[in-house]
Length: 53
Image (cartoon, rainbow, N blue to C red; front, side, top):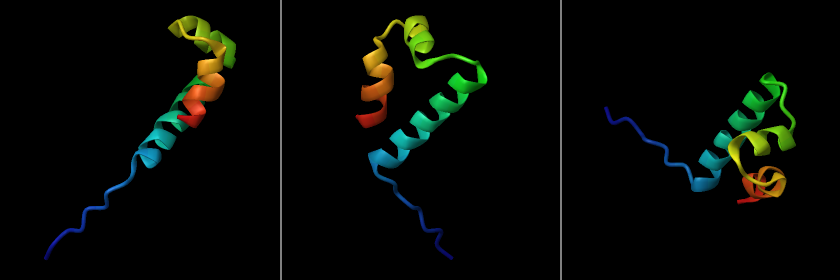
């Protein structure tokens, strides 16, 4: 019996990563700005690029 392997597109994996980052950020009680400051990126990257790219 063959096992079918489901291949997901990049968006599927991107969404999983994005949701995990959001969950962990909220668990750590960090705002988007605080996370951006901690990892050395702009607030725009956290709020826009991380979500839309």
